[in-house]
Image 1 (cartoon, rainbow, N blue to C red):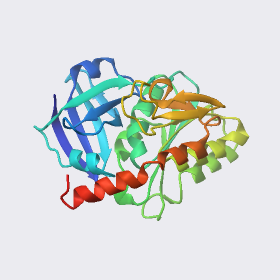
Image 2 (cartoon, helix red, strand yellow):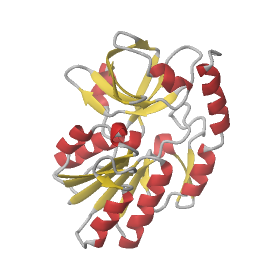
Image 3 (cartoon, rainbow, N blue to C red):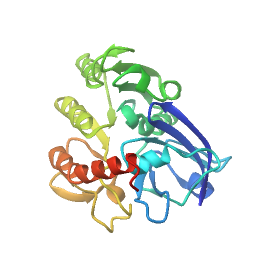
Image 4 (tube, rainbow, N blue to C red):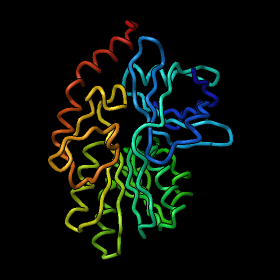
Length: 276
Protein backbone atom coordinates (compact mmCIF):
# COMPACT_ATOMS: atom_id res chain seq x y z
CA UNK A 1 0.00 0.00 0.00
CA UNK A 2 1.07 3.57 -0.69
CA UNK A 3 0.22 6.39 1.69
CA UNK A 4 -1.06 9.74 0.48
CA UNK A 5 1.02 12.43 2.17
CA UNK A 6 -0.67 15.45 0.60
CA UNK A 7 -4.06 15.96 -1.04
CA UNK A 8 -5.49 19.25 -2.27
CA UNK A 9 -7.76 20.52 -5.03
CA UNK A 10 -6.19 22.55 -7.82
CA UNK A 11 -9.51 23.27 -9.51
CA UNK A 12 -13.07 21.97 -9.24
CA UNK A 13 -12.92 18.15 -9.45
CA UNK A 14 -9.15 18.23 -10.09
CA UNK A 15 -7.03 17.02 -7.19
CA UNK A 16 -3.29 16.82 -6.56
CA UNK A 17 -2.13 13.80 -4.58
CA UNK A 18 1.43 13.38 -3.37
CA UNK A 19 2.07 9.71 -2.68
CA UNK A 20 4.79 7.87 -0.84
CA UNK A 21 6.44 5.70 -3.50
CA UNK A 22 10.21 5.65 -2.92
CA UNK A 23 11.11 2.98 -5.47
CA UNK A 24 9.16 4.71 -8.24
CA UNK A 25 10.51 8.14 -7.33
CA UNK A 26 14.10 6.95 -7.77
CA UNK A 27 13.64 5.64 -11.30
CA UNK A 28 10.83 7.54 -13.05
CA UNK A 29 11.43 10.05 -15.84
CA UNK A 30 9.37 12.66 -17.67
CA UNK A 31 6.49 11.19 -19.65
CA UNK A 32 6.11 8.01 -17.62
CA UNK A 33 3.01 6.97 -15.71
CA UNK A 34 1.72 4.65 -13.02
CA UNK A 35 -1.35 2.47 -12.88
CA UNK A 36 -3.25 2.58 -9.61
CA UNK A 37 -5.93 0.43 -8.03
CA UNK A 38 -7.74 1.79 -4.99
CA UNK A 39 -9.19 -1.43 -3.62
CA UNK A 40 -9.29 -5.16 -4.21
CA UNK A 41 -12.16 -5.19 -6.70
CA UNK A 42 -11.45 -1.78 -8.17
CA UNK A 43 -10.51 -0.94 -11.73
CA UNK A 44 -6.98 -0.04 -12.75
CA UNK A 45 -6.42 3.46 -14.15
CA UNK A 46 -3.30 5.17 -15.58
CA UNK A 47 -2.08 8.52 -14.21
CA UNK A 48 0.97 10.40 -15.43
CA UNK A 49 3.65 11.22 -12.87
CA UNK A 50 3.40 15.02 -12.71
CA UNK A 51 6.28 15.58 -10.30
CA UNK A 52 8.73 13.66 -8.17
CA UNK A 53 10.83 14.19 -5.05
CA UNK A 54 13.71 11.76 -4.79
CA UNK A 55 14.65 13.20 -1.40
CA UNK A 56 11.23 12.54 0.11
CA UNK A 57 10.51 9.41 -1.94
CA UNK A 58 7.23 10.79 -3.28
CA UNK A 59 5.52 11.11 -6.64
CA UNK A 60 2.77 13.56 -7.51
CA UNK A 61 -0.37 12.54 -9.38
CA UNK A 62 -3.18 14.79 -10.58
CA UNK A 63 -6.63 13.31 -11.11
CA UNK A 64 -9.73 14.81 -12.67
CA UNK A 65 -13.06 13.36 -11.61
CA UNK A 66 -14.62 11.86 -14.72
CA UNK A 67 -15.88 8.52 -13.42
CA UNK A 68 -16.31 6.24 -10.43
CA UNK A 69 -12.64 5.55 -9.68
CA UNK A 70 -11.48 9.14 -10.06
CA UNK A 71 -14.42 10.24 -7.91
CA UNK A 72 -13.28 7.84 -5.17
CA UNK A 73 -9.70 9.01 -5.58
CA UNK A 74 -10.67 12.65 -5.25
CA UNK A 75 -12.41 11.89 -1.94
CA UNK A 76 -9.20 10.58 -0.44
CA UNK A 77 -7.10 12.69 1.93
CA UNK A 78 -3.62 12.72 3.45
CA UNK A 79 -3.16 9.60 5.56
CA UNK A 80 -5.31 7.42 3.32
CA UNK A 81 -3.65 4.61 1.38
CA UNK A 82 -3.89 3.36 -2.20
CA UNK A 83 -3.83 -0.42 -2.59
CA UNK A 84 -1.63 -0.62 -5.72
CA UNK A 85 0.67 1.88 -7.40
CA UNK A 86 2.56 0.18 -10.24
CA UNK A 87 5.29 1.91 -12.21
CA UNK A 88 7.07 3.67 -13.65
CA UNK A 89 5.47 2.48 -16.88
CA UNK A 90 5.80 3.55 -20.50
CA UNK A 91 8.76 4.95 -22.39
CA UNK A 92 10.20 8.20 -21.06
CA UNK A 93 9.90 11.33 -23.17
CA UNK A 94 12.77 11.66 -25.63
CA UNK A 95 14.70 14.63 -24.26
CA UNK A 96 17.60 16.34 -25.98
CA UNK A 97 18.65 19.89 -26.79
CA UNK A 98 16.39 20.38 -29.81
CA UNK A 99 16.75 24.16 -29.74
CA UNK A 100 13.34 25.77 -29.38
CA UNK A 101 10.69 23.43 -27.98
CA UNK A 102 7.02 24.29 -27.72
CA UNK A 103 4.87 22.50 -25.14
CA UNK A 104 1.16 22.79 -25.86
CA UNK A 105 -1.27 21.52 -23.24
CA UNK A 106 -4.87 21.77 -22.24
CA UNK A 107 -6.96 20.79 -19.24
CA UNK A 108 -5.66 17.87 -17.21
CA UNK A 109 -2.97 17.42 -19.87
CA UNK A 110 -1.03 20.16 -18.09
CA UNK A 111 -0.06 17.53 -15.52
CA UNK A 112 1.89 15.87 -18.35
CA UNK A 113 3.27 19.13 -19.73
CA UNK A 114 4.96 20.09 -16.46
CA UNK A 115 7.61 17.33 -16.19
CA UNK A 116 8.31 17.48 -19.92
CA UNK A 117 8.83 21.24 -19.87
CA UNK A 118 11.13 20.88 -16.85
CA UNK A 119 13.22 18.20 -18.57
CA UNK A 120 13.44 20.14 -21.83
CA UNK A 121 14.59 23.30 -20.06
CA UNK A 122 17.16 21.34 -18.03
CA UNK A 123 18.53 19.97 -21.32
CA UNK A 124 19.17 23.51 -22.57
CA UNK A 125 16.12 24.09 -24.76
CA UNK A 126 14.33 27.42 -25.08
CA UNK A 127 10.91 26.31 -23.87
CA UNK A 128 7.72 28.03 -24.98
CA UNK A 129 4.62 26.72 -23.21
CA UNK A 130 1.13 27.32 -24.55
CA UNK A 131 -1.40 26.24 -21.94
CA UNK A 132 -5.16 26.47 -21.86
CA UNK A 133 -8.41 25.54 -20.16
CA UNK A 134 -12.10 26.14 -20.67
CA UNK A 135 -12.12 28.87 -17.98
CA UNK A 136 -9.67 30.59 -15.64
CA UNK A 137 -11.06 28.54 -12.73
CA UNK A 138 -10.06 25.30 -14.47
CA UNK A 139 -6.50 26.32 -15.35
CA UNK A 140 -3.98 24.33 -13.30
CA UNK A 141 -0.22 24.47 -12.66
CA UNK A 142 0.22 27.91 -14.22
CA UNK A 143 3.03 29.03 -11.90
CA UNK A 144 4.84 25.69 -12.01
CA UNK A 145 4.81 25.59 -15.82
CA UNK A 146 5.83 29.25 -15.98
CA UNK A 147 8.91 28.44 -13.87
CA UNK A 148 9.74 25.56 -16.23
CA UNK A 149 9.45 27.74 -19.35
CA UNK A 150 11.24 30.64 -20.98
CA UNK A 151 7.99 31.96 -22.42
CA UNK A 152 4.38 31.18 -21.63
CA UNK A 153 1.11 31.88 -23.45
CA UNK A 154 -2.24 31.27 -21.75
CA UNK A 155 -5.62 30.76 -23.40
CA UNK A 156 -9.14 30.14 -22.15
CA UNK A 157 -12.08 29.09 -24.27
CA UNK A 158 -14.31 31.80 -22.80
CA UNK A 159 -11.68 34.55 -22.61
CA UNK A 160 -11.86 34.78 -18.82
CA UNK A 161 -8.04 34.69 -18.63
CA UNK A 162 -5.24 35.16 -21.12
CA UNK A 163 -6.12 35.01 -24.80
CA UNK A 164 -9.61 33.94 -25.83
CA UNK A 165 -9.65 30.77 -27.87
CA UNK A 166 -7.92 27.43 -28.15
CA UNK A 167 -4.23 26.58 -27.68
CA UNK A 168 -3.90 25.85 -31.39
CA UNK A 169 -4.44 29.52 -32.25
CA UNK A 170 -1.24 30.97 -30.69
CA UNK A 171 0.62 27.90 -31.97
CA UNK A 172 -0.53 28.77 -35.49
CA UNK A 173 0.52 32.40 -35.00
CA UNK A 174 3.93 31.29 -33.73
CA UNK A 175 4.52 29.05 -36.75
CA UNK A 176 3.23 31.66 -39.20
CA UNK A 177 5.70 34.18 -37.78
CA UNK A 178 8.58 32.26 -39.32
CA UNK A 179 10.28 31.75 -36.00
CA UNK A 180 12.36 28.57 -35.91
CA UNK A 181 10.52 25.89 -33.94
CA UNK A 182 12.40 22.60 -33.62
CA UNK A 183 9.87 20.42 -31.84
CA UNK A 184 6.32 20.54 -30.48
CA UNK A 185 4.89 18.44 -27.67
CA UNK A 186 1.08 18.33 -27.60
CA UNK A 187 -0.78 16.95 -24.60
CA UNK A 188 -4.47 17.07 -23.77
CA UNK A 189 -7.81 15.81 -25.08
CA UNK A 190 -7.44 13.62 -28.17
CA UNK A 191 -9.25 16.09 -30.42
CA UNK A 192 -6.89 18.83 -29.25
CA UNK A 193 -3.82 16.72 -30.04
CA UNK A 194 -5.27 15.89 -33.45
CA UNK A 195 -5.65 19.59 -34.20
CA UNK A 196 -2.13 20.39 -32.93
CA UNK A 197 -0.70 17.81 -35.33
CA UNK A 198 -2.83 19.26 -38.13
CA UNK A 199 -1.43 22.74 -37.45
CA UNK A 200 2.24 21.67 -37.35
CA UNK A 201 2.21 19.24 -40.28
CA UNK A 202 2.37 21.83 -43.11
CA UNK A 203 5.47 23.30 -41.44
CA UNK A 204 7.20 19.92 -41.10
CA UNK A 205 7.81 20.44 -37.39
CA UNK A 206 8.47 17.26 -35.40
CA UNK A 207 5.41 16.83 -33.18
CA UNK A 208 4.97 14.41 -30.30
CA UNK A 209 1.62 13.63 -28.71
CA UNK A 210 0.94 11.70 -25.52
CA UNK A 211 -1.72 9.01 -25.93
CA UNK A 212 -3.55 7.70 -22.91
CA UNK A 213 -6.30 5.47 -24.28
CA UNK A 214 -7.96 2.61 -22.41
CA UNK A 215 -5.33 0.83 -20.31
CA UNK A 216 -5.78 -2.11 -17.97
CA UNK A 217 -2.44 -3.73 -17.11
CA UNK A 218 0.05 -1.24 -18.56
CA UNK A 219 2.34 -4.03 -19.78
CA UNK A 220 0.95 -4.74 -23.26
CA UNK A 221 -0.74 -7.98 -22.21
CA UNK A 222 -4.39 -6.92 -22.43
CA UNK A 223 -4.21 -5.17 -25.81
CA UNK A 224 -6.74 -2.55 -24.72
CA UNK A 225 -4.51 0.37 -25.68
CA UNK A 226 -3.87 -0.57 -29.31
CA UNK A 227 -3.25 2.43 -31.54
CA UNK A 228 -2.33 2.71 -35.21
CA UNK A 229 0.85 4.67 -35.86
CA UNK A 230 1.88 5.05 -39.49
CA UNK A 231 -0.16 1.97 -40.50
CA UNK A 232 1.49 -0.10 -37.75
CA UNK A 233 -0.26 -1.39 -34.65
CA UNK A 234 1.35 -0.24 -31.41
CA UNK A 235 0.52 -0.51 -27.72
CA UNK A 236 0.38 2.91 -26.08
CA UNK A 237 1.40 1.53 -22.69
CA UNK A 238 4.70 -0.06 -23.74
CA UNK A 239 5.51 1.53 -27.12
CA UNK A 240 4.42 4.98 -25.93
CA UNK A 241 2.65 6.84 -24.54
CA UNK A 242 4.33 9.37 -26.86
CA UNK A 243 4.24 9.05 -30.63
CA UNK A 244 4.81 11.11 -33.75
CA UNK A 245 1.55 13.06 -33.98
CA UNK A 246 1.68 13.15 -37.78
CA UNK A 247 1.48 9.35 -37.90
CA UNK A 248 -1.34 8.74 -35.40
CA UNK A 249 -4.69 7.51 -36.69
CA UNK A 250 -6.69 9.86 -34.47
CA UNK A 251 -10.07 8.93 -35.91
CA UNK A 252 -9.55 5.28 -34.99
CA UNK A 253 -8.32 6.28 -31.54
CA UNK A 254 -11.37 8.45 -30.90
CA UNK A 255 -13.66 5.58 -31.95
CA UNK A 256 -11.86 3.18 -29.61
CA UNK A 257 -12.10 5.59 -26.69
CA UNK A 258 -15.85 5.82 -27.21
CA UNK A 259 -16.28 2.03 -27.08
CA UNK A 260 -16.81 1.88 -23.32
CA UNK A 261 -18.05 5.43 -22.81
CA UNK A 262 -21.64 4.37 -22.18
CA UNK A 263 -20.60 1.66 -19.70
CA UNK A 264 -18.33 4.09 -17.86
CA UNK A 265 -21.11 6.68 -17.63
CA UNK A 266 -23.59 4.10 -16.32
CA UNK A 267 -21.11 2.97 -13.66
CA UNK A 268 -20.47 6.57 -12.62
CA UNK A 269 -24.18 7.38 -12.40
CA UNK A 270 -24.85 4.30 -10.28
CA UNK A 271 -22.02 5.27 -7.97
CA UNK A 272 -23.34 8.82 -7.58
CA UNK A 273 -26.75 7.33 -6.77
CA UNK A 274 -25.29 5.17 -4.02
CA UNK A 275 -25.07 1.89 -5.94
CA UNK A 276 -21.51 0.55 -5.60
